Image (cartoon, rainbow, N blue to C red; front, side, top):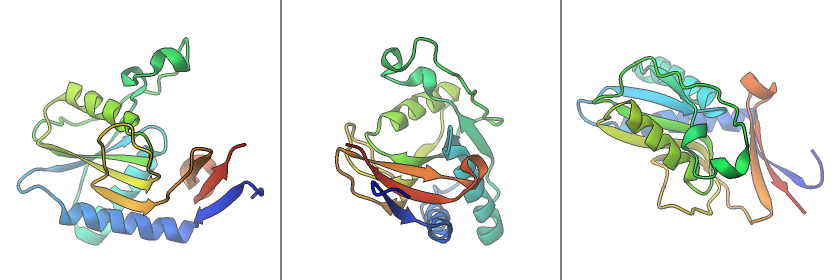
Length: 180
């Protein structure tokens, strides 16, 4: 960890945050709608899988898990790459009439979530779309708020949040990094 990094959460704290997210999802369920989790690539996918496992193990709820690539739905696509890298959407179930919980690692401006909602609605007509995030860092540009939030970490304009997950990065931790 460099002088410009601050540890926000350890692996144990991430486990507790995911447990709370699962409990919140159970408490907030729609009556009669089947629950599905859809992770926003990249780190939202393993988080959705972990939450689904908790729902199964701790609450006897089986929820299918999908993966959403929102690249082509971004409103800044022309600014980020001439040839964007597509990682693929894998939602192996119909979202029609389902309560879809979008899962992402960090909520910042809300633009990623807006793109994800557009992508989900292109797949069908869910009964409801909810949002679960591991970290809410503030600074919204769109009127989007999480339904379920593991950690709220206020940041300044020169700071960013980096979520590292075992499945991708080899370690579970959350750090705040200062730029400049």
